[in-house]
Structures are given as C-alpha cells and as structure tokens.
Amino acid sequence: MCGIFGYVGSRINAGQMVIDGIKHLEYRGYDSWGVACKKDNEISVAKEIGKISGVNGEDFAFHSSQAIAHTRWATHGGVTELNAHPHLNEEGTIAVVHNGIIENYTELRDELKKKGHIFLSETDSEIIPHLIEEELTNTQDFASAVRRACQRFEGRYALLAMDSTSQTLVAARTGSPLIVGVSPQDGYFIASDIPAFMDYTRTVQYLDDGEMVVTDGKSILFTDIETGEERPKREIEITWTIEQAQKGDFEHYMLKEIMEQKDSIARAVNQDEDQILTLANAIRNARGTFLVGCGTAGKACMASEYFFSVIADHHVNFAPASEFKLYHHFLQPESLLIVVSQSGETADVLEAMKVAKSKGAKVLAIVNVEGSTIEREADYSLLINAGPERAVASTKALTGQLAVLMLIAYAMADKLKDGKTLLLETAAMINDMLNPRYIQRIQDIAELIKEKEDLYIIGKSWNYPMALESAIKIQEVSYIHAEGFAGGELKHGPIALIEEGTPCIALVGNDEVTTDILSNTIELKARGAHTIGVAPERSEAFDEWLKVPDAGTAQALVNIIPIQILSYFLAVKRGKNPDMPRNLAKSVTVK
Ligand code: AGP
Image (tube, rainbow, N blue to C red; front, side, top):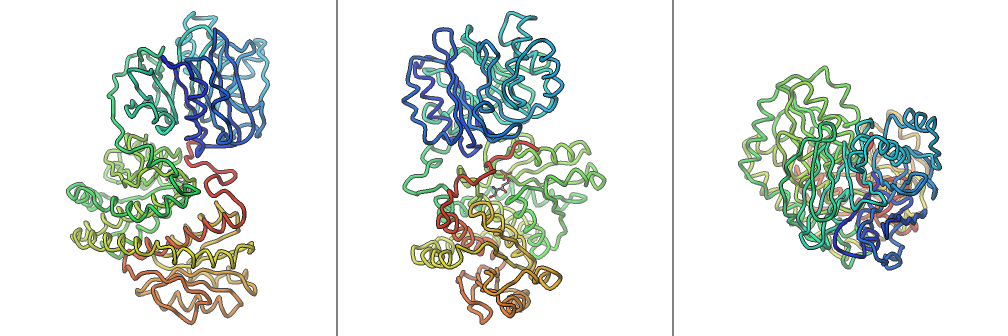
C-alpha cells in the first residue's frame, strides 16, 4: 500500500504537480503525506499527518522540475510526521519515497548505525537513503548506488529516489507496482498507479519485478536490478479516461461505483466467447481447480463453488489467498489455479500464484486492472472491464467477478448463450433497481438501524458467501460489528447473540433453499431479531422487506446491491467517510 509518485522533465512546477497527482493515489493510504522537490541543487521537503486531499498544490508551485511525493499507509512505525515519507540521509542530499516492507531492515540499520548513521524515524524505509549514501562511497554514480542498495534489500517494495546534485530520478520494484508515464514534451512520470499522471499522458510502460529505471527527464533506461542488463519495454496506450477515475457529481466514489453497476456488469458479460470456452476447457481438463482471492474477491471465488456445482456439476475448491500456501500438497502440473483480484496487485494472491507455479500448475487470472502484476504474470487472464474502482470498499468489481465466473460455469455446462442471456437480463434488472425511490427506501432502513452496534446477515447457497461479503461491506465503511452466517449454522451457536431488536438481514432467492432460509429467518424473529429480508417475494418472516428481482442462478449479483447501498448510507449517517475507512487501503501489497 502507500502511493508514490515522482516526476522529472521540462515542466517547472514539479512540486505542485506531484502533490496534485498523488491525491489520485490517496486510496492506497492516507495516514500522512509528504513531498520532496529539487530546487537549485537543494532538496526541500514538506510532510504532515493527515490526508493529502486537503492540501493546496499551489503552495508547492515554486520553480522545480524534479519531485517525489508519498501518501502513507503505516506498516512500520506509528502515524507521525517523523515516520512520514520522504525519508532523507542526514545531510538531506538524498530523498526516498517507499511502498512495501524491507524485511531485513533491522540488520541493515544496525550495520549502518555502526558506521555512524543516525536514524530519526521508526520506519524500515529510512534505511534506504542511508544505504544509498553509504554505497556512494563505492561509486560516484547515483543510479549505481541505488542499484547496489536495492541488491541488499529483502522483501517486497517499490521506491523512488533522487539526489540533490544529479538530474536523475531512479525507481525500483520488487513486488509492489510501479508504472512509468511517458510524455515526449513533458518528460517522465513514475507512480504506483496510472491516475497520478493521467492529466499529462496516457502512454505507459510497466516495470516488472526485479527491475529498475533511471531517467533524467529526456531519456529512460530500464534494467535488471541484479545484472544491470537492459530490459526492452513496450509503450502501451491506456484506454480508460480520467473522468472514469473521478467522482463526477457523486459525493463519494463508493456511491458512484455502486451506481455504475448499471453498465459494468454488462461489460463483464460481453467477453470474447472463444476465450471463455477455452477457459472452461482448461477447468474441465485440469486435475483439481482451486480458486483464490482476498476479502471481497475471495467471496466471489467462494460463490463460484456453488456456481460450478449447480450450473456445471463440477467441483472446484476455494481458499482465501493467504491460506493457499498450505494447499501445496494438493498441487501438481495438471492443477489449475484461478486467482480473482480487482487491483491485480494483492500480495497474498501473488504469493498463491508463486506456490502454484512452483508446482508447475497453470494460473488463470480474473482481474480488473489491465497491466497489473497479476494480469501480466498469469498464464491466461480475463478482464472484468469494471473501469477504475477507487473506493476502498469493492462493489462493481465484485459483480463483475461474479458475472465472469458464472459465465465460465455456463460455458462448462455447454450453455454459454443461456448464461449470457441470464446475466444480461440481470444487468438490466439491476439498472431498473437503482432508481431514486429504491435508494430512498434503503436510506430509510439505514436510518432505522444506524445506531445499532451489532448486525447479522444470513444466507444459503451462493447467498452464504454474499452474507459474508455483506458483513465485510458493513464493517469496513460503517464500523458496525457485522457478521455473516450460513442460515443453517445459526442454531449451532450464533443464535445466542440475538437480543430484542438486533437487526438481522436475510438474503433470499427463489430457489431450492428458499424454504430453509425463510425458516432460519423466522427462528431469528422468534428470538426478538428485527428482520430485514432481501428477497424477490414478501414473507411473514420479514419485519422489513427490500424487494429484489428474481434472477434465478444470478441472485447473488442482485442481492448484494441493496447491501452495498445500505453500507454506504450507514457510513454516511454515522459520520464516516466511506471512501477512506480507518486502517484500510484499497490495494494490499503487503503480506
Ligand atoms: C473489499 O471491500 C475490500 N476492501 C477488500 O476486501 C478487497 O476486496 C481485497 O483486499 C482484495 O483486493 P483485490 O481484489 O484488489 O485483490
């Protein structure tokens, strides 16, 4: 996590530019921010605790053509100004911004301390400028010193470094994303994510793991960190627009992205049919298919266990990506790992891919961000085409993931056309559902339960993973204690939690488990729960009813929508910013 952004080139307002640009990366972390600008062979630094969105870029509009900036999600060391980036050597001649974790930092810091270096912060990152300084006693060249320092780091990181004398910006990555923006008239931009520089260019080059890049603003060189060998790079044009990545008239990204599901589901469904059939075949021929993802993406994987079972009569295994390492005994070269990730950068997912590849298994990635590490490192990949998702709470990516997984299940059952028709009809129903009257009804329910501190959600079949997902959504943005359960599990323990007035949401479809989940809801009501049914039909089991269309096997996509909206309004009504939940970041690039 953490967002980093740097620029070197012909523009003379580098400080203002990186401050404005890094505001687009605030989704990656927002504990504190900082900037370093080079001006007349001196580096000036500003850093503060808090969100960068409130900072006026014009305050940094002094003459400078080289700058780096950072927005932090704390890992090592608390949220203090001293721990905020950039970090510098004692003389203030080398500045570094860093994302990730240098795992062997204690050992390196002890070594540097013995050589007389003094550290001011509690971070692992501060060792970087000091080690570069130390390496400058072995080489005159700043870029070579950065390379030598990087060769000593263990862990996953991305960094940008500059010094006060050379017009050189150096970037290196191992495990955390870095993308170069290329503009023949302006120079080079290097950032954790593309929106940072989209006001200036849509032409990008991706750094791969173990690579570094050196630029003076006029030319650029990509090399292997270890060997120094040049790495040729393609220029890629970004197809989405900056408007898609902005809030527009919405108060928050989260609401904007919920509403975008009017179109994004159809975009996910309109895949190249031959590709879907190839993937369905890959699953059919695999000896064991495993699906992994984290958080919301993991819940999409879990729901697909039901899709593949009910639609395609085929068994697949889900594991949270962070647990997958322990499954290596089951993997063989004929196994298939399907990874699902919005960002395409999640460290636990990359780790799972490494485990599968080490056993010779093939990896299929279902991702949203084109050009992301997961997309590039997988053997096959499929984009869900949701467009940029900026809110920490994942919404439109989930329904895109569910749609693609269902499509593959239908293709396996030789019913791809039927699956496509059902999903497009579902997308149209969701479009109708997202109307002002419906949203007002959900707001009213949010008003009713906003002061509650506990909330439970139940579901069965694919609505069970959706109950777990509902809990994530409510927890992360409203901070209400929410938990999801399989309806049938209530009587084995959780029902003891129910008190008079406890809000309980039941996710219901119109299928073979409807009677069961309704009787679970009645059991809750009998213990005093205030029941809220999300269901196609009214039932006496519900105190409140949120009507949803009957979408058959696609019910999971429909039922999660009112919960996303409810979570949003619970957050807003409780005075929380749903786009920036405490302790979280959008892209989790640390293990
Ligand atoms: C959900 O709202 C999350 N913020 C989180 O659980 C997320 O889904 C998870 O971190 C996985 O991210 P990814 O899809 O980018 O891999």
